[in-house]
Length: 369
Image 1 (cartoon, rainbow, N blue to C red):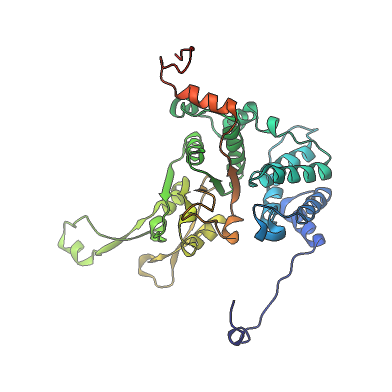
Image 2 (tube, helix red, strand yellow):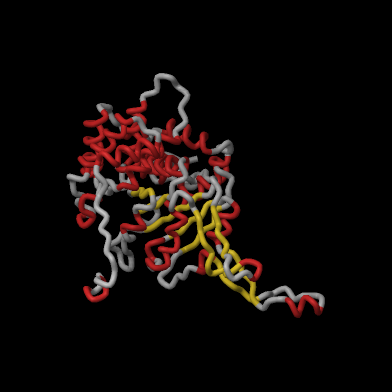
């Protein structure tokens, strides 16, 4: 907080929360959402804000839903492709709302709260088992890629448990609409693997950066490096530079319309991650001030704008472990956050063990071939 002596030198402006009527108008104009649907979404937001998350107490009324979630939800309606005449759009909105809001919470009672509120306002029944069924997952994967055969050839080791199907459905739905994705879960639950799966299905290159405590912005933006190629002519020697700019993984991914993965994003310092804010917005732009001016012009810097196929993903472990912390709320709500639980059911564990047993190895009277 700034001191009073410093603050009173400024003209302070206070921005209060937007009233419900104005929010309805914004949703209607920006996302082409019918007014009746706008009012339902606003009522759901106000209803959820009256609850508090036990796993995120200090988030207050923003624990279950934020304004960014509301606009993301409405944008999914706007960008949805549907040719059926009598399509149930209320069920569509309820399903998307459940995947968007319940996909991030970490306790079953919080999922039940969201499900009850959505069913109360939309008057539609939600069934997570059918929503994350194998048929729906394969339908989504085939929609995102024509190279569905690569799933069996390159990723034959993956066991499609209930948790993995849920994760694929939530990540695929977010990537379909170009949303930045944040995967939160314990080690070994398939966060990085699912990112590799979607990059392979889209036939796009995956650029990955492992974050650490001493990470700097140059690790993903790039920096000035010594010129390694020696010029042949003397004329080139006089005009050549000692240092030249080399693009980092993020810049390369934006230029090539690839996938960019920030692994263990919570280990990096917040001041470094703030550099990503402009990339996480809808415009997906980045000003490369570190590169300097183009063609020796002092008043020009490079402005990058990513293409439509560019995707950004991040993974992290939940806070509480040694050296692990949660991201700041300002950065977290720019992502579509997805909680990745561990597989604990007996059926899932049997599937995993059976898939990884060597041929001829037996743990009982049954031989696995």
